[in-house]
Length: 91
Image 1: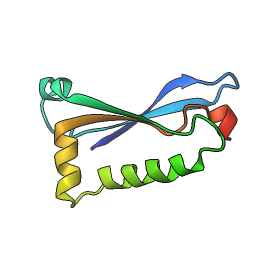
Image 2: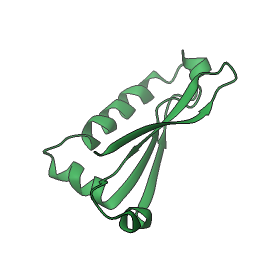
Image 3: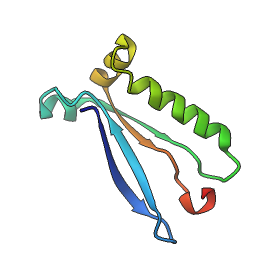
Image 4: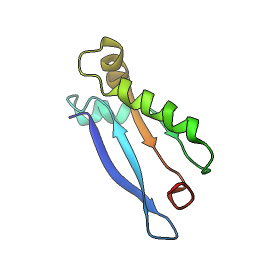
């Protein structure tokens, strides 16, 4: 696999604020731990709908199975993606 979803925290209303971790998990754990992290957050404010499009585009790229660019990015980095920093305000 290349993707792990987990709760980062919970909002004041109890809505999960998820973090999506994407990397090439086929490497040994020590190699993965040595990779630099890229952190991307989106949707802090309700009006930031363009951030959703940017986020979805990056997510689609990183998850492409037969794209050499995506595979190289997954081998080089650990991506920590937070689709909604403020789920209470966006929902």
